[in-house]
Image (tube, rainbow over all chains, first blue to last red):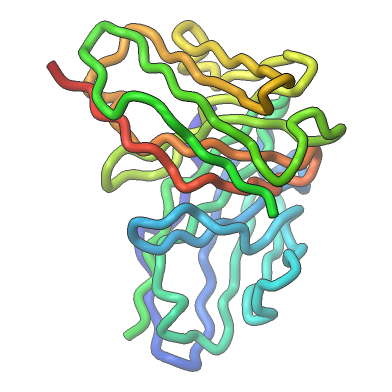
Length: 110
Length: 119
């Protein structure tokens, strides 16, 4: 069970769109549509942003969207805002009631 | 509103056992379809899934930690617990207690408890 692969950092200017990738294997991301994304501000607990690859919980801005193709899931933030600056983690079901996280991506708003 | 409150020693000596308890309020730990568990985050690093437990007592562990981890649940007090044995400095982390909605990957997080392993 290896960690999912995310880029260490992604940046964009206010108003732009950015996409964070999350690459796994056929044993996790590629085999299940159960990928979630979490936003974490410094010193805070993670917050759910996307679940089941593309579903947005109530209260989460529609600027956040998710998708999945093959072994790679993606989180897109459109209309980037200063408050979006945070760390983002993907998480996938890995079978046998186990879960695996990505290494995290630091998003910087320029 | 659901609240998860972790508690336990903030300092543990190497080779000893780390013990944390999470108290659930605003909901029942016996709710069908909800799993309860622990995720940790070493300082400056990413998230590491430790394991989950169902109210029936069924447990599921990270294979890399399985030999050292024990989760338990007490439905009478609405609490669940983590024990991690033979700790080393590498186990120093913020430990989050979480609720997982079955089948969806939706984790809800408590505020986290920092545990430092040091003599």
